[in-house]
Image (tube, rainbow, N blue to C red; front, side, top):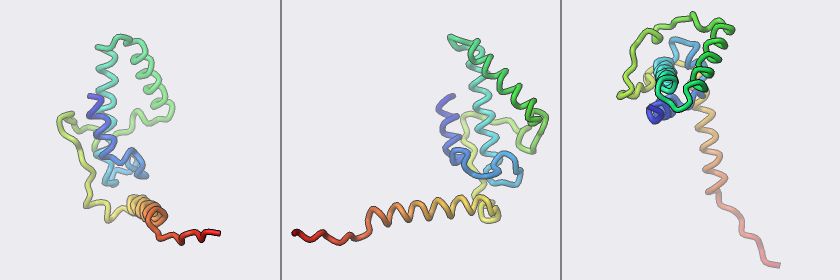
Length: 131
């Protein structure tokens, strides 16, 4: 189960895409909900079958309390009601990336960062002259 959570989190680009949970039109929204559903399932399993269920119960209560305090516990989005199968990785809707300005911004920044790292590493350097 932990492996699935990690894979799903990776496919969701580590939660770095702005609005992936708060914007239902975000192409990463379904993917992020699958990650959260898997994490909740893992926490539920830990509460039932771990060596220290009290720690898992305490964490679950803390999360529930924080969600109630932030008033996000009662918010439901279109992907919140979908069942998720932990045998299936939910991919982002790549076709929607073209129409999402926040996602395009993240990709552009990432591309510039990778290009800069590549340029620094492979840019020809002037050899130092021996004195």
